Length: 239
Image 1 (cartoon, helix red, strand yellow):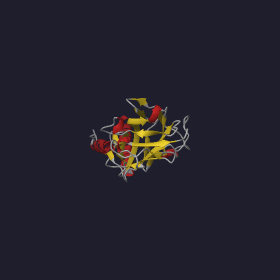
Image 2: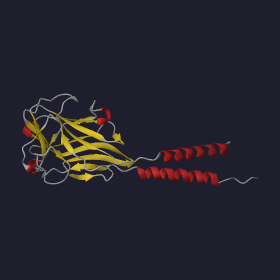
Image 3: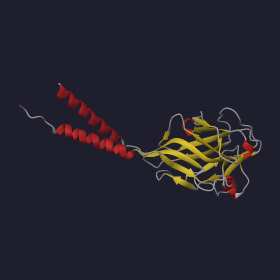
Image 4: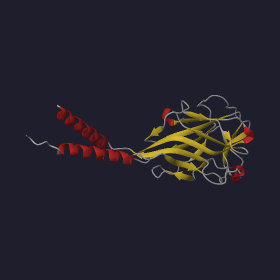
């Protein structure tokens, strides 16, 4: 009887395991990939780039800004990062409205960024105005909202909210996210609270997701070849 050749399946299994290991190594775990603590930042600024959290595979810094429909709020260092408007932008999502906060996540070469959710831990609403926060991204040029939230009160003029997009936002190039604030502002302010409103420490705004290495095409090719070899070998044995 001719001895069975066991070396080939072992080689194929080892190659497949190696490819899966490389893929597993390239896949990161969900975590806070960008965040800002604005408890001592002056609202005279029109941007915040002092990241308290930033994934090492993102281009630094990740800057938080606001749209043309907003104006920088009173320049008191205890007020955080807020903006005011005289517009009435209450109602359904409309990408032409410019009362939004914005940031751009740019993965380094060979990486992709994924955004799974956004948490706002210390949002301030002046005069308790009713607000809806809509999330949109540059993936579709802000054509549609991918999620929304209504701030929930968490103290004097202090609110929290969280948005999880309908599907994770994934990009291997620069990804810009806008947080549209819809409200009948009436010259009132909204934004990330400072120490005056109880935010004494910790992140005000957190971006949750992952930054993962993009597998090389040769890795996928080797994995496909290995799996094909295993299937063919098994069919021959069964035949």
